[in-house]
Image (cartoon, rainbow, N blue to C red; front, top):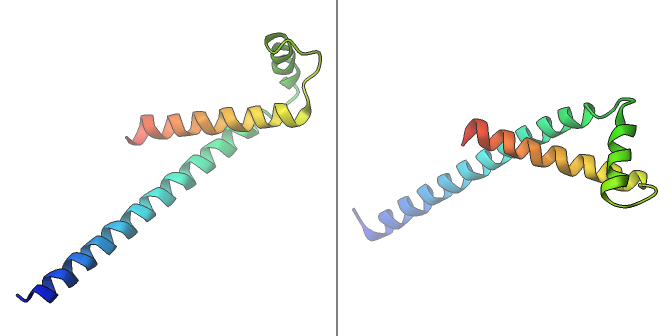
Length: 90
């Protein structure tokens, strides 16, 4: 086998591994996104006021901006989704 063929095979194998890694990462990201959206939907109810009141106490703030609250929910749901993925698949 020529050196050129060995190098070509190595490049092809490296490319296949790279594409496989991209596909795995995309599947992981899709799973986490789906799970996070599911968790976020759980917060779309009338009980959010309890969470907001607790946040006000813990953050020593009289009011919590809606954007801050929404970002808090999104962040915590994505963190939980990533934890769930790692627990179930790694």
